[in-house]
Length: 76
Image (tube, rainbow, N blue to C red; front, side, top):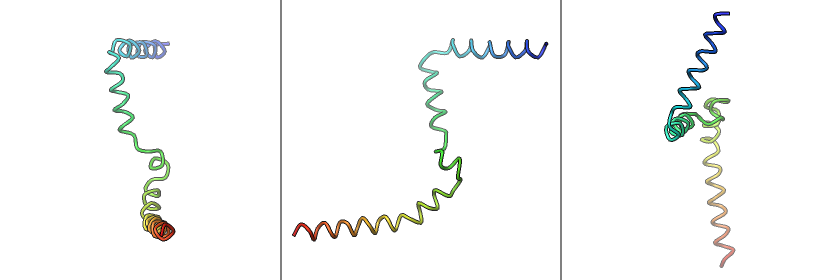
């Protein structure tokens, strides 16, 4: 029974502390927490998205260059 009383007391204290905190401070804390998070891809897959991005970047740039050169030729 004592543990449940302690839990209720703890939750109540936390809730009161949150309610008494100014709204701007709460928003700032929330924004800081959001900025500190990694994107979900990195949390789920680690460095795999970075490796795939590094591997496909030259391919994507080549396609862009090819598209630009074809676009210039079509204009003439």
